[in-house]
Image (cartoon, rainbow, N blue to C red; front, top):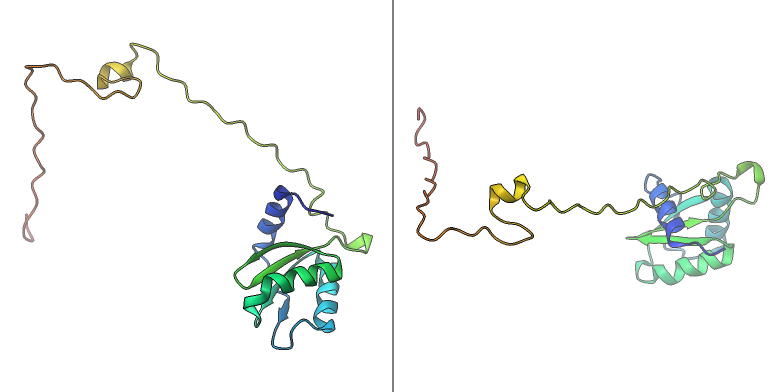
Length: 153
């Protein structure tokens, strides 16, 4: 079963709180590691595996491991790979992907202020144009705030 990007994102989010159960160390990809991962997937459906060694070949090892046990590689982040497989025991299935995903929210479009609204009158600008100063009018410059010096000031 191929996972969609939304399903992968959902499983990756659910895996964020999990700790790695299986560790792949100096012994490499042995039958014991495959059996341990297969058992963990039957129990939990979503499992993290930590690469203690072989960090350079983690992508190839993870894909090989997923293919050999019939699991899906959800994501590799750092030295941790996340695997998912629906449990073969119907009583242990958690239905992580069965739950309905919330529908995508429609994007809201910000309304432009009407001509002559308060926003336009205050700033003198509208529709992204800068405020225009009247020629010959006198404008006051704002004074910089005074800085306090010393302990009592």
